[in-house]
Length: 211
Image (cartoon, rainbow, N blue to C red; front, side, top):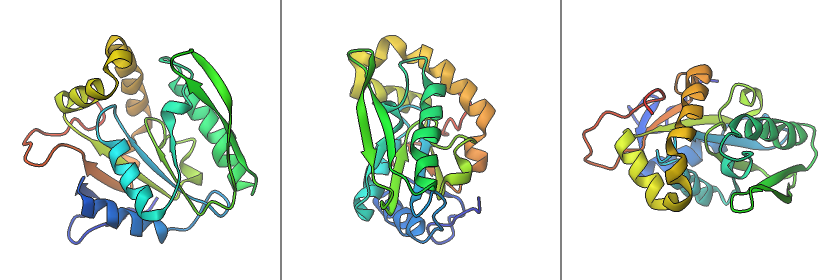
């Protein structure tokens, strides 16, 4: 993918500010669609990095739906299954001009629920979560954003949001993230890198290796 510049002088790297969300929205709206007529923006990064907040802000500017990779994983050890479902049941059907249809995982019941449908006429789809920027998805993505933040920031955010569910599985999931980011080089392939640390936090972001 070609590297994108979303604000003056920033190169590929930007901070997770409201202005960045606006600029990313304008940027992806001008990209060439690769999944049929749909521009798919992948927002990837480790748990708690700030992907969801950024993806929702970008989608709001574009009036676009958001697909969460959390809905595609087959449980705590299902990252690879989630990526497979994203490619096979979302990207490839859209590329053929067909409706995307995926199963949403119920984290409380521990199983997949009914199919979810996306019409191929959708102009822009924002996909957020670990695995959204996988190499298998890359040929059909309109753009890839990678968000990073320090591990202490990420853990605090993730447990504040999903503590009861996530806390017992933090290390388990982090090991899957370790393997994924080591193999996939998401940051190296990203069009845009976003620092998801809070403003004024002087800590270096953890990139894609520190769990």
